[in-house]
Length: 463
Image (cartoon, rainbow, N blue to C red; front, top):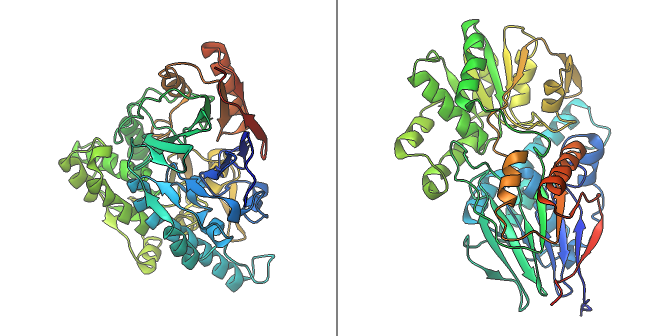
């Protein structure tokens, strides 16, 4: 029987000092609750954390609360369950439906990468193995439990949580936990108040402690309309006959891009050239927008426009055939930071031609291929080989689904009173520290940028 402690402890086992791998362990004395369980991405020293022994016992975790489906928040769950976690994984219905698509796909990509490495002898490991398998992902999904948004769910006699809409992605929520006389709110990833597709984040309730993301904590998004910026990038490339390769997150970003492209064509701002959506996961996810109409701003007409904006590429052979075509054409393909999937094969085919355009569409974590392209690298390494970058590389600045620094501060300003402490996480060190300084200077709140594996004691308010 587990000994009951009087303290509440919060440990930062991911998204501390980096923008990936969100994992927060809350120990209430009666329960151990993990908030998010994502993959580390980017630099090799970060990715190696996915393979290291867990800093906590997976078998001793009682429950997981998942804020949303993106892999840097959900992608380690199959490994956690394989390591012995047997409790429920709570999330919104939208997050559950997306994870049914994302997690098996993540496993499939890892299995494919391992097979490719073994076939071509490019791994130091003999044999190369996936972090987890599709069977692991399917087994993990059996532990998911969808809970209603805006309704409190009890975890025990003394602990409960409530999910509220966070924008950012279908099903995305921030989570407020109450335990032993105190409250802790985890933002997950906050969306934008004026996102072209998603509804804005809900207003926060009073909380003793706040754990806040800081992906864009050191910058503000430009005032230009995303559709206008996209048209300015695409028009000259199309005019010169380019193949435009767009690495895009399969859920959220791909659908937004296709809608903008369809609107630009409809207005005559772009010619009617072929557009291909080369991501079975993105194709499957697009259908969820009709099911969750209450979470976004799209009308039925917008949804129909989105669904007819591109030719869907389903099979690997169809995908390979795109690499034998010439421009002008647009290929939208996962993954968003070019870390894997079909898009890296398109990069191999089209990076070397100066007529072509590689269009980056979101945050590019340092250490990823997308991060290298965004920083002006002359070559990128794919499957053990260096490929020269001769194509034009541009990065959209206006289409982010993350709140920027001003929008985060505005959301915080809606709290009825200041938290006792605000923890700044899920950002590169410069972004987290910039947000810390702004919060302290403008709001006068007590803040902390926690270190990886740091544990803090949370105490209930006196009186």
